[in-house]
Length: 457
Ligand SMILES: [Zn+2]
View 1 (cartoon, rainbow, N blue to C red):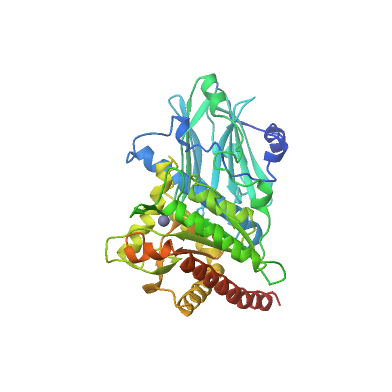
View 2: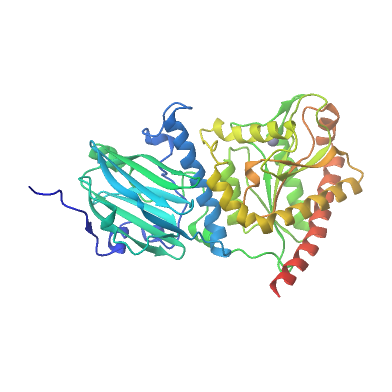
């Protein structure tokens, strides 16, 4: 009796990876545009709360971790040194479906996509050491006719599985804990459906920057070039933000951001806005814009609403895993929900994997953000402007999660406070606030640059 043919080892990874346009090959690593978790694939869009829905969130988290780390990994020395554990890995048919399980020594960012001619699954890992065992040791499957794995580009490794027929990835998730593993499940689909979903990731869907911008090594500012300040007017488009007293947060903070940009530009800084008009920008795209601009500082501008009496006065928010109080937690939640309005589900991005990896990069960045928060508090209070009774707070604002860019969120005031609303529309107050922010940035940049030069020695 004939055994099922085992998977042949492909002669060259590059041969099978090369049908993507040149700029999408392994060198650049665009963020995924047709990620498997994307709603429109249809196969990954179960009702919220189902198991698959949860999985989709996990994948979303991984994609985020991937996006955020792609830049940082190049610049900093925290490459994952995850190893494949062959004993916990394998390929197995499950009816018409096929399941691929990869036991790994530690969680790592990964992404999976399909390519055509021949149909094949491609999985990229942030440096997974496949070890000495041959790829054929993963096992055999009717659905997988050939397998290859190996290094793809510095810091990245790739697994390619050639498929006997068109399939779709219906599960792609990573578990954390003591025995982390990556799990993929593919099910047969029609040729038409395969063609519709296959394709190398392209950075179009979320208007993410070109790969080169993502991969460019980042260096701390040393005061030799103009300070690059990315201003992020919150909300916009379908998400107006807080509304009260005939005012909406989105246009208000956009107007202030434009004024602040002028003030910073006149002072010789390079200011960039994450949105120039009343459009919806996903949180992730805001962070990507900051990375693409080579931001030295990221400052998100808001004027949210909270229950009456809870908040008045400008408040500086730093990123924290835990909100400093329940009002902060509600604010963070509200901001993240903005993305749901436009159908971008980032709800899973507090995933443990993302956390673990980003904390490593943040170890250097967070004290720098702390320093800027102190400078902002001093400058705003020093200008005689009203601040909240707790002027610096912490909240789990997703938009502050760039691991390598000092990021702060400034609530200029609260739309729920009548006094704040009066200040927010007062040109004199706005000019004073813009000047205070400029003063804070200037003071901080000097100290920060001195530290960077000291660390370089
Ligand atoms: Zn807001």
